[in-house]
Image 1 (cartoon, rainbow, N blue to C red):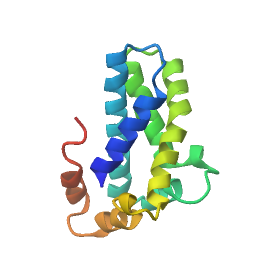
Image 2 (cartoon, rainbow, N blue to C red):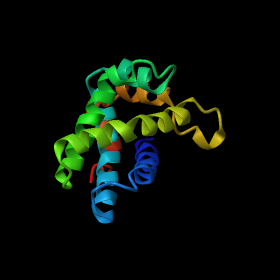
Image 3 (cartoon, rainbow, N blue to C red):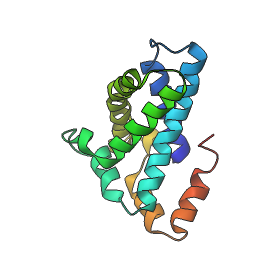
Length: 148
């Protein structure tokens, strides 16, 4: 599932970040690293037993999205990625706050979709990973290779 999350996030980040102060290659790198940071944030939340933060973000209303711990973690990590690619801190935070609600919305649509092609986006699978055999080590093994 993590590879599907990363792929969708990278695709949507690439679309949303078309016009910014970064070069096209830096924008592509930032989209890849930003997608990895979303997966990293999800696995960290699962590993710490914060499944509720994930389910709150990917189900129901968008009210309170900006107060969600997972959302705040993703904003922080993605802002850092953009700064490392050459954006000043204020522009990086603004860019992250501008594009990430749409990315989260796209992921949320996949998690809520009954369509057959979206069945890989399943919150119950995340819950099983968090509570199942292997714990955080098992999660990291499943996510390995997505953070590069």
